[in-house]
Length: 92
Image (cartoon, rainbow, N blue to C red; front, side, top):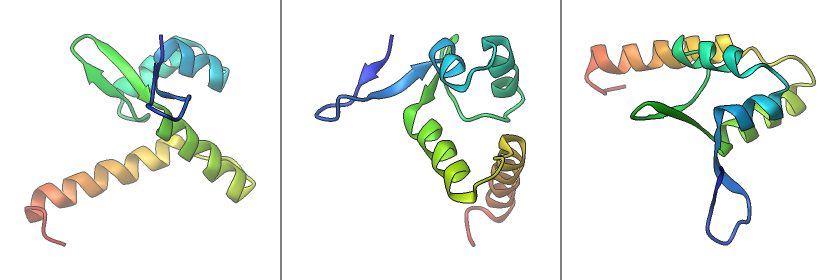
């Protein structure tokens, strides 16, 4: 059940099941990564959706680097940046 963006014809968000199918992993693996804050997702009450832009970014990074993209490393960097922002009050 993807939601299409206006004028783009591409989904704006994927369900976890759809994203898992695209990534060729088990949905349980993706749910676990999301709960561990190791994969980008949006929580809407009891459901998670995956922004299509996040999958596109991961794909582009893998293509550009020509190697493996470590989503766990990206998540750790994101957590660190949020913590720094929280400690500094948003000032950089």
